[in-house]
Length: 139
Image (cartoon, rainbow, N blue to C red; front, side, top):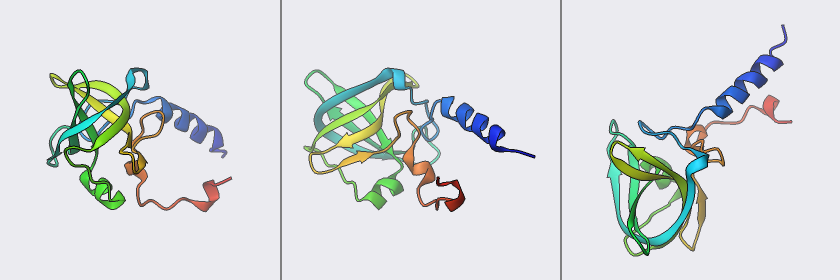
């Protein structure tokens, strides 16, 4: 039996499903925006809560934006540490989480490093973190 067609269709269907943040809203490439500003605060939402992981408040010229970055252990592994006063540029999808507008970060640039947190479709890169590639799947 040939499963190549089934796998290709499955991969296509999965690529079309919006990427979800941990216990939260879906990333939508159609609502992607770029912001720049100053980190006003950083907090960690505990496991089991909507959008668990690292959040930051970014003060732009006109308002303060709530940004969801990624799970804390993933950012710790990358040694990504942000503190109030850091200047950042973030690209992400503007979504609703409850009654709050949140930016699901795809990329963050702090002037030292640029970190890709999601692919262009919004799939979280941490979902495959630590998973070894199957040599048979590499062409």
